[in-house]
Length: 439
Image 1 (cartoon, rainbow, N blue to C red):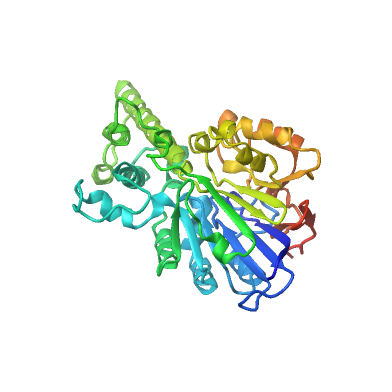
Image 2: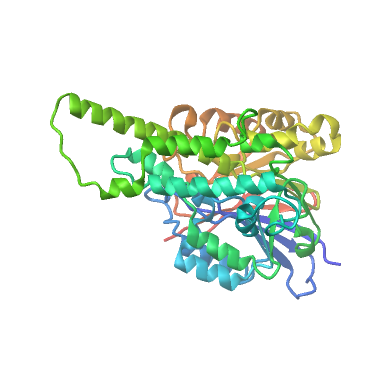
């Protein structure tokens, strides 16, 4: 039987977004005659690379993926619905190539299961409406439906007159990316799609021999209600919050139907300005809450091949992570596996609440016989957030450099279109290899 001998990770230059190709190379051909397997983790961007770098266009990146996979993608993982993780699927050139690559397995969060939309609208009770997908209950199904409703409301916000430009830009990052989702649904048909929650079977082992995959997140609402940020005294948290925000910001349709009115200086102008500010503040709060919620639907994968371990947490924040971290005192085997990580995809582009301190503490105390960890990050600086909300957070970057060699596509100033790390599957460590520069 063929054995994994090498792991190769390519991190594509997309500016601000995630797009990683993990290739497992074997010492001999597998039953299909190929001696490799390819896993693509996310394919999106929200901001292009800085001036002077590779262009990072989604169609160009897709062509590179096609070349690097030899025209066959084995597994596609889309951690969650944000555009900086899936926008490439809505680009015509990218979508065409993804169809050609025809992944055998498509992994997405449980909240993306297309069966949920029909289930959520049905009445409660046995035999009433479509069946709830395995592993979920009505509470989880309803939460997924509320996320969808929230995105619909935010879509309306982007059309409001007088909305602050920064708030409007942030709202656009939360949209459903309908074309991308439609393509993912198509790629997931005929039993190829799996919708993951903590502890679920991913099916990766059947497609990538020699790989062990553990799904650490996201939990369902039933596994950990905190992931939904539900208030104990308000089971309708999402509906209540959204309704309140929408009453303040008004209807997009109403805003579009009103003719523009010019007001001179004075009390009326002051009042209108204050109302516009209040509308932007309410919209910003709604957008922020939705951003947190979608991040906490991120798939967290712990992948182990040979003697190496890789951690891909998407944009999971602390509400998602708690479900795993609180298991560690009673599960020393899981604690040891997380402590011995060889490669870490920096969570949520280096935000302050996506790399738990307790996880970093495990790496700081890692066994002396382990090679130095590698951390990878695809984050254009200066385009998202300010001060404590900016990504990447300098404090986190400093802390990561203490325990790992940190590699970022934002450092590719020579026109490189991707950053590549290679490791011996038996012992590591991951080391960078030169890649051609884009002329």
